[in-house]
Length: 332
Image (cartoon, rainbow, N blue to C red; front, top):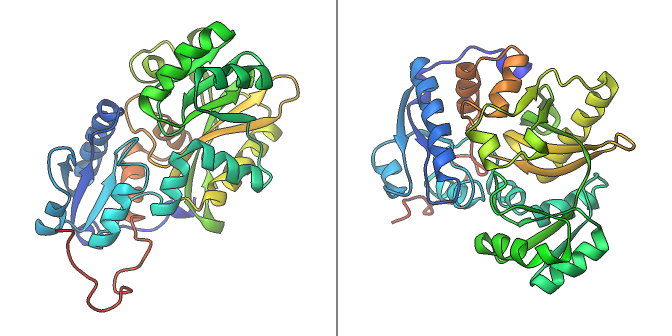
């Protein structure tokens, strides 16, 4: 991969903040991700420091001379364009996608609308605002059906619904996390995920991972806190199938304008082997159970080198020096 070819001047990276924790429902996972990234960067000699926006104002980043940020935040206010926008105003380069791509990717409904407009395969869906509406969605989409918040990750607030009687509870759980509730057609088949690195025409997919969870339930517990889930990388899928999935994933990444890195989740329908895009994560997990490091290892990239190269890719939507005179300054 060309992204990993050049030598790195560690000293030129300056003082680095690893943003972790935050106030989202994924705070616990973010702390695990950030702790791993922090250790990896320090192992490579980077002047890296933990920074929790839930406890310290982002303005401190400017005041204490941070040169760039590694975003290891997940979910609201970390993966949705808000932190990215604040760092843009401060002129501090950061890892991952910019403001617009982060915001769109966090919103599963907007993501699916754009993918569908670009001719990319994603399961049918309905946006609902009541238990009765959820029942109507079940009638339209068929059982089982997935009910989930439109703007959460890590399967938080997600329910697989089989009957009308389950719709009210599923809607209430999803609505606890987001007023916008998404009902999605369930695709039966192989559950896979595929990371992407780079930007634009240079974006490249890493090896595909096939996920086999206990009873097919890849939930929050099975993602992060058990060793019962099986991860196959190489995936074991036919080579032509894997190439097609990688093509679709890179197209989906470019469709949203992602950069740096991301990880797309894909279901491969058993009946005809058609891949369907579920969502894309622009600040993927970096824990001991996380999938981007696993895929990177299969491509010959160590966890430490992955973290370092992602840090090197940190940038801004608006390059430094491009702002009109008089607009620079802190958020205070």
